[in-house]
Length: 264
Ligand code: SF4
Image 1 (tube, helix red, strand yellow):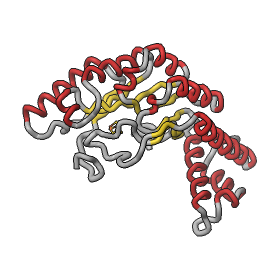
Image 2 (tube, protein in one colour):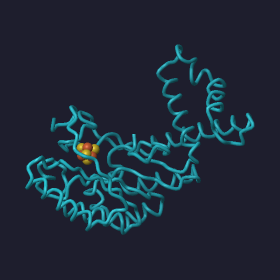
Image 3 (cartoon, helix red, strand yellow):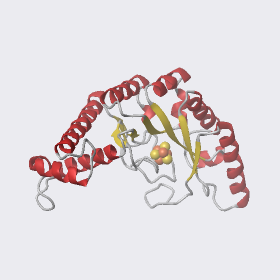
Image 4 (cartoon, protein in one colour):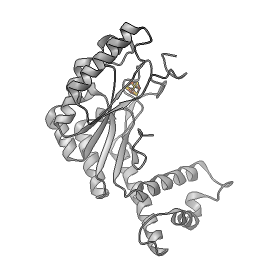
C-alpha cells in the first residue's frame, strides 16, 4: 500500500521490504529481508500491466464505452477469460486470484486516468540511480499517460545521491518523495534507531527540493515520550528541521505503538 493520497496510483514494486528495517516504532517489514528487484523483473511487471490495460480498453470499446472502464467492463473481462480468472467465488486458484487482483488494480488506475504510479517498497531510491532512471523511462514509454511518479525515500539515501542524479530522476518523471522525518532531535532519532541525523534530514530533503522533487515530510508527535522537557525539545527541533527543509507538505502521524514494532 502507498500513503494516503496515492489510492489512484498503479503500485509498481521496484524493491522488497526496507533496507534499514531498524526503527523501533515501525511495525512494517519485520523479519523480512530487503532486496532490489532486477530490471527484467520490473519490466515484466510493467508489461503485465500493459497487457491488462489493453485488454480492458478493448473490452470497453466492444461494449460501447469508448475505452473507459467501469464494473460492467471488469465483469465482462472476467467472463471472457475464465482460464485466467476462474469461476467466482468457489473455483479460483491462487494464480487466478492474483490475476483478479492485478485486473482490479489496473482497472482502478484506469478509472483515474492512469496518471499516477507509486514505487514500492520502503525506499525506492536505494536502487542504483541508473536502474531507477531506466525504470522511469521505461514506465513513461509504456504508459505515456503517466504524469506523476512517487515513492517513499530515506533522507539519508537521498543525501548520498548527487544533485545531478536527483535532477535526472526528476526529469525522468520522479515527482514526489514521502520522507519519514519523525523527529528533528538527534537524541530522539538515535534512541529510536532511525539511522539518520538531523543534518542528513535537512541536507537530503533540501537536495530533493532543489532537484524539483516535491517532498511530503512525515513527523511523529509523541516520539519523545510524555516527559515535558523531552517532548518540548522534540517538538522545537522538529519544527526547526521543517523550517530548514521547507517541504511541499507536512504530514502528521502520531506515535502508535503497534505489537509488531520493536518498541512494543
Ligand atoms: S520507518 Fe521506514 S526506514 Fe524505518 S524501518 Fe520502517 S520502513 Fe524502514
